[in-house]
Amino acid sequence: MMGKTLNEYSRQQETMCRKNDSISPRLFEEYGVNRGLRDEKGNGVLTGLTKISKITSSKIENGEKVPCDGQLWYRGYRVEDLIGTLGENELGFEKIAYLLLMGEKPDPRQEEEFRSFVGNCRTLPTNFTRDVIMKAPTEDIMNSMTKSILTLASYDENAKDISVSNSLRQCIQLIGEFPLLAVYGYNAYVHYEKNGSMFIHHPDPQLSTAENLLMLLRPDRSYTTTEAKVLDTALILHMEHGGGNNSTFTTRVVTSTGSDTYSTMAAAMSSLKGPKHGGANIKVMEMMDDIRTHVKDYSDKEEVEAYLVKLAEGKAFDGKGLIYGMGHAIYSLSDPRERIFKHYVEELAAEKGREEDLQLYQNVEELAPEVIARHRRIYKGVSPNVDFYSGFVYDMLGIPVELYTAMFAVARIVGWSAHRIEELICMDKIIRPAYMSVMEEK
Image (cartoon, rainbow, N blue to C red):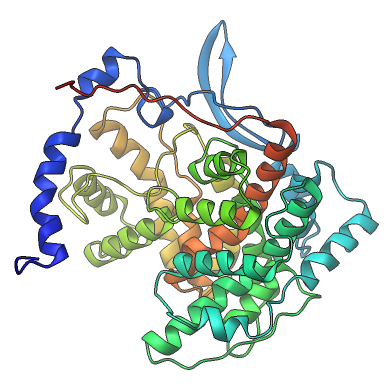
């Protein structure tokens, strides 16, 4: 090895890789290649059809496409209507999960039966927590969960069976198991890596997903009605967002190869954990902490705006010139999930005595779009997205930052499952995009 470590060798060879792997942006324009499968205005390349959900961000007026308030539809129903039909303290994650998976709203008997099956799936194989989750604990809970998902295949006698009924059975089991994989993975990390206390609560099959998450996380197993309702709403809003997001597209790509459910969901997890996808609310929290450090009066809009200008100019925080939580690849005037969520955020902030922090968030929400419009070249409007408030909510709920992306996964496993089933039923071709070679022949 000539005295070099592999790390040293890799750093030295990076220059060669950069030299030979760089491709001129001009060639992408010349050959009409949409980088990231999106054009310069952010419109996605059409790659599939789905009946599971729909996202609306524009409408046609006088023959022209114009932005409109964002809408998110689950199986033909606007998500705000689905949430609005729930009772004041009713937790609807399981009911709406049934709708996404089966394509129809459940009647009371179907809902109870589905809740029962999901509740009974909140268990892991004997000694799985000890032998798998507690071995090699890590701060990266998404990696811990992905390892566990792949290992669960070893306990499934029909792991490779990709029939629709078997895949649906596996998906329902994973929906029930995901909260355990997340919380137990975090508890193992706290105990072995941070020298904290270890406690492993058993889930309650009679409780909802949101209630179990809060109960499993807390030493005293207690939570309030408001806390459960807010977390349930967050999970509903995160469970599905069309077929074009990276992790859902990954689900469909891997499913199209004939791969099994466990491998498919592990691939989706690997996609979601990327900071450009599922980790966005962490950047919002880090940015807001930075703002708190530099802004003395959260109610002083001039002071808040002055610091937002520094962020936009790349003179503050991470120097990237971004105001995190603002803007979305699809929505322009508004993100419907953020609009819905905001009411519950205000309710929880009042219960937790966090009105001052809420004031700061509201001022940033009001001022940031104007600052961004002045300092950046944009093709559409900018508005807060769902990640703007979700980190704040998790913080008020006492959910540790290491679990933020895992909370996203606990919800999105429902959408991934629905898209896997649809792909199995409707598609018979492997998804195989084309790349044009611009290699020089020698």
